[in-house]
Image 1 (tube, protein in one colour):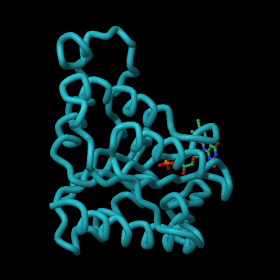
Image 2 (cartoon, helix red, strand yellow):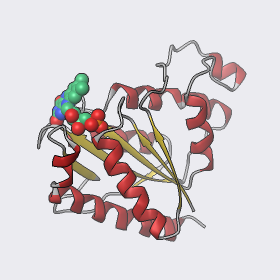
Image 3 (cartoon, rainbow, N blue to C red):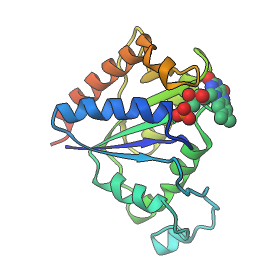
Image 4 (tube, rainbow, N blue to C red):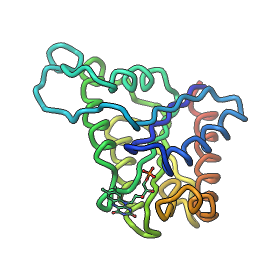
Length: 195
Ligand SMILES: Cc1cc2nc3c(=O)[nH]c(=O)nc-3n(C[C@H](O)[C@H](O)[C@H](O)COP(=O)(O)O)c2cc1C
């Protein structure tokens, strides 16, 4: 089964670190994994020109093209975002909006895939839940089945307190536990619902 992960940070730091950790664990269980890090990438925001509705593709040619392709192939999606201004990163929001072009081709393209969420905040309670809610809402709108790791720390997904440093996020045992639990449920759903 194929897992596609997006690390929607403009740099390769804490969000990418924990996303790679998640993918390495999935690889150990024989999932095929692919990471798209947004660091150094060019992803413009949707300009609502409606070109995609008529031409079945986005008018913009940028690094979204790689995401479009990988999203279609994936059975499972990991959306990982740094918390920015109490919610998802601006890059996350751009990616979500731009998938409108995929659904202009076929409304069912993302339906039935399994999705999990990772939110990394510099503060312990900096808006991780709001970031999860946005990602889960996106999943529901697009027919992607969202999973959580359950109560006691991973209610909406994996939540990290980075203190803006890879060395510090490594010590966030609570966050690491929330990742473990969310991954367990992610794998359960993939094995149960993806044929
Ligand atoms: C523009 C901006 C806004 C941010 N807003 C928040 C915030 O509201 N809450 C929070 O906990 N951290 C906030 N942070 C801190 C980042 O979430 C934190 O440093 C995170 O680890 C960055 O992820 P990265 O290392 O993958 O880039 C913000 C950072 C930036 C650059």
